[in-house]
Image (cartoon, rainbow, N blue to C red; front, top):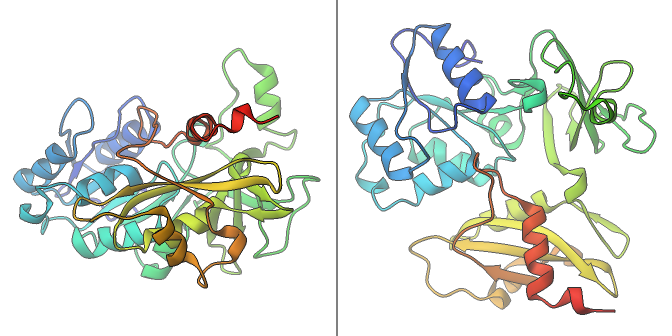
Length: 330
């Protein structure tokens, strides 16, 4: 990974991601150690202001982070006055990376060489990565191609058959990076890794003719509304283009008529005025298919997240069901 970013002993990497996670430890520490690069830790925990300060004061050339971290940095009050001219590259990973955020990182943070990486702790560190020579379009819309000495395939979640290029299915990966097993949990291991050694990621994806992989969403996050499969990521990507929206997450909630309905949790940027759910619905009309327009909108200041910065959609769903009174319906 560090080789792909062109790391040398002259590079200085800011690492705001936790060291107990493969992102910080493997992609961060080991990537620097193997290339003699400098490691910079802004704070014990993530603080967007301290990350910006570290980049500015240490003349960092690279920055790592999950999407929510980059969003917080872009929206921080100190961002306009922070000198980020020393930055040239970095990695955004850990969860689905919105294309609109990638474009802002490239244009506003001077990270012209920023790359996307995809992986799991179980396949540490990554299975795919964009390259330095990939077009901006490929870097903002895909997670790149398969890493050397690894294999990836897209299969039908129902029967396990390999799907044609361009069709949506489950991403499976195989190779040296796949874990041996879950500690003292043979049942979970058997559910994740099949007899042929393929790790079933639980992520829905497509692969194009050139081998570039696009993550569509999690199998468990897919919403079935009135018989139609709806992928939240598609709606999130569309809403990210709204000038008032800083961050958005979409999930499904129960509905008596359609089986499931969509709810969008929206965080407005610091300069946004008052925005209503009805205004956002009008913004969607005629631009995305009618059944993909969220029925509900919830405006929030933060999202339920893990300590590593990943959005917990199951908690969003639980909270939404309770607040909408859907748990009271017969």
